[in-house]
Image 1 (cartoon, rainbow, N blue to C red):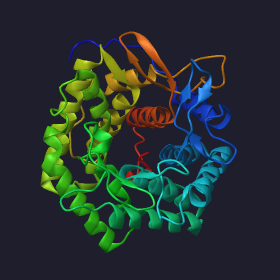
Image 2 (image 1 turned 120 degrees about the vertical axis):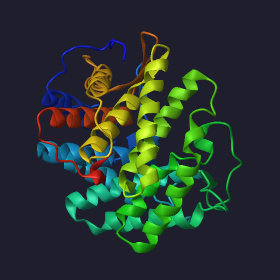
Image 3 (image 1 turned 30 degrees about the horizontal axis):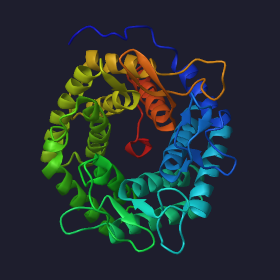
Length: 361
């Protein structure tokens, strides 16, 4: 592997967590009602609208920060997000989560992420309202999105008709949907578990072409983000030999493509996602750890944390960079993925690995 451009001493994980956590709590990325904006546009000094999916990711992140630090403020913020999802974002008439409150679209992928966020808050608080709403979302995934040979990526609301597929990956079925299907594993229900196995078979049958189907290198980096969702979900299916083989093959392929494309376009979340999978697969005894690659990915992820006098930015993680230029979007998902990846890297280095797969943001 070529020498990393990111070789530097990483900040102590306590500092990284504190800065990222303060960004979630005080930057304004979470609104008073608990909803979380898609990201903050630094050039325009403005948040994008609240996203139900991103609020789900934020809920999972805030619970993770609470578990690592014991700081009640994180759990309180997670509960605010869970309340928003349960009481505001849910469409009672359609019995599903729209893309945004009031939207006429719903995404398969979003529902699983939202439900997993609700389950994270349920496990931390025992509040049955959150578990019940997560079950509602899991049912919508199974009843509203199942097609003849794949899961529809997007449906209309309230009619629940599938939309025509488009070239971009988020408007097509694909292996990335397996991460959303993890909610069926978390429901502790045999019927739901069978639905996960259906999604697993679909994902394994198509994953090898997911990256090669895109000829544009910059768009391959975006697809690496989505493909890493597939790798993350495979960690829940390592009892299957085919899943273990796909995990080893996919990790090698994703790491190679990351380094090939990064000089042109690099997303912070991709390094973090690959690192989380790499470390977890190693500690599960599935794929031996490439220490040099893991160290490089940790340094890459860490390089995106913002230092600024502006509280809208300080401690959050940038979305990515093109060439040497940072893209001016402070991103909740990038922040959640990167802070978790760096925490796991620190745990690995200090021989205190203690990670449950349900905690994966």
